Image (tube, rainbow over all chains, first blue to last red; front, side, top):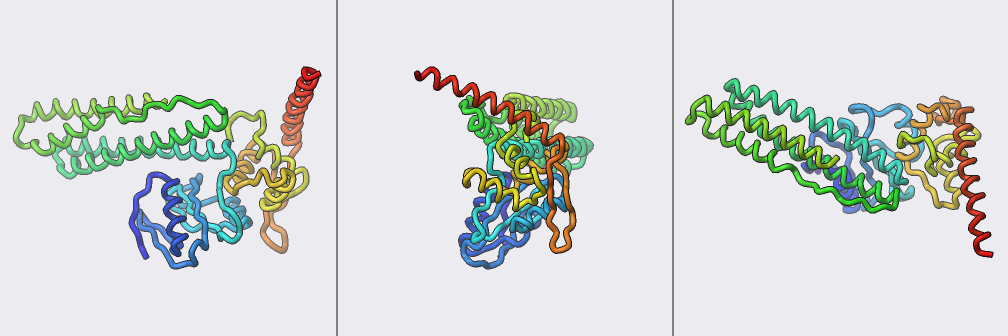
Length: 230
Length: 107
């Protein structure tokens, strides 16, 4: 059985995989959002998701340690590692103290931030492509813009998790920072999309001015959004 | 683990203790579980991260790589690791000694 899902949150992904396993479906493979399941005894496995240090591989030390502890590496995808352990062999939780949980989510945060920056760079390249008259560039730019927003939200969520962990560690409840994407960001995207629609019926000069405005709005929005969370 | 080297986290403290003699991954988890009466059970991710960090700090090192029977990597504490442990022990002793002041207050 194959299911398609896009997860930007490893906790909800883990929950889903364990629910599937509880229903008798064990994950055996993954490719670009497609999860492959095979039948298993209900609740035979417990799944966990880890973030590694290398793309599509793990160190021999990691592999050996997991093997020794009865943990099977099911999927390596990008930096993500999906692991499982036979439920009969005992509870399976990867990170068992606040300090290592903080370290884990800090790593995830860093990954999302880098992904965010890469997506923005790609988006700007597509915007440049669009500006030079390639309509596909615009479409790609808007799509990438959406990915950027998802990534920004993932950064926000991860920061929320980290804030909770820090509070648990220090015993001091931290004031939850407001988690909103600056309105400038979607505004910039909207102007972009509008320009896309009317590009042939307005003068090139106005088009150009609006385009620059949109880019400024998006960049400013992004900076504001990121800053507000720091 | 965080960049701060002191105080040691419980996981670090007990892993160092378990590595006073050569020990492998599962052995470390078992010993720490016994020492703490089941209170501290190290997860695989926590253990792996701690082993990596402590190797970087040269607090522990790989003791044996390949034994004849099965591949089981063993680790052992280094001199630097013992120093880190001693520093933490002094800090804990200070805490405990000062804790006695509380009893005086009760008299």
